[in-house]
Length: 237
Image (cartoon, rainbow, N blue to C red):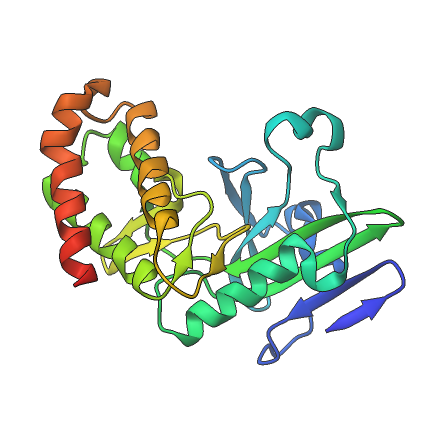
């Protein structure tokens, strides 16, 4: 970790090159023609940048909800390990250690301004994937894919992983498997409980909001949600 009075960078010790502040600046990569597009879906969006560590997803943390218009991308300082980027970096490193399909953390940064800080995170890009949201828009979400999503979620829940924002934008579908991304505010719990169902309810709301089954709840439950939950329960056992 590189630390100074006004900020710090936490990074994978196995990197051949130590990241500096430029790694977290999309304009730095744009000037070198190494900014390879952006993706929406989260509060701040994600930029894909070609770093010395490979192509990465760069996210700048932004607030959501009622605080967003007032505080924007500023968070209350309560210690370096409680910063959003550092906490997610540590969680992702643990998920990698457990062999779960989640992004590999590359580096995290905070910049402190007395009582507040701003944060960024770099993770290795998962190539050749689309989001579940994109599959819904393309009318490609069927019972078979729903079952795979259910089994994916169960893998994380068995390990006690609570995803704080489980929605269709944070499920990636690729030829080699499925992944969950964006673990901001996520955590590992000691046991399963009501939080598991809360994760699932959040995902179901996302499917309806994005127009799965033409927002017909009865049709969604029959064609998508029932096979998803059946596969989820089967994988739990």
